Image 1 (cartoon, helix red, strand yellow):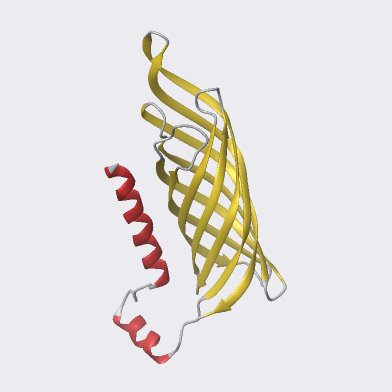
Image 2 (cartoon, rainbow, N blue to C red):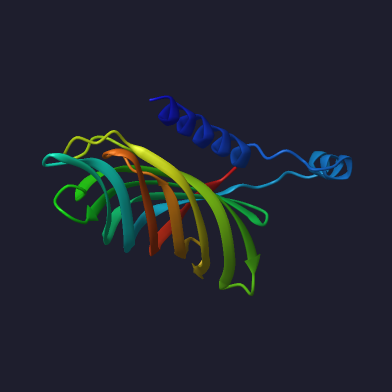
Length: 201
């Protein structure tokens, strides 16, 4: 439970850092005082899919053993992107289905926060790379203690007119899996989403 609470704190801290970025120098502070920064907010839907590998230790019949199980995952849900200059704070709420063996196939909620650096190639395409944290929680379709860990993304934003963007990312993650003892899950995959500009601050 302590590790789950720490993951909550990490996600909240990351969220605050992206919503209220601090200037890095006195010069940047002066510039920030002189001009108003605009935060562009986009919200939409996203789906993800890829491969996962779960390593877990548990009792199997009459002996304790460690298994390595490979499978796939599918997920979908809501995505929020906040653009501030060349930085993006991205937050996702998804429902995940792990398609593995009978013991590790399950569905659960997932919360993700990512900080991205964005580099505009032109008015249409913007490259991005980011690091983040994810947290998996019940409700689930079987007994599940929850998990979480770190992830990295590499992708592109595609602008579709003044109000829409397509988000595409290759992603990889590693962290705790909430079945068995000392379980770990590694994933590789991709996500795509479409977001709509809901305003600016």
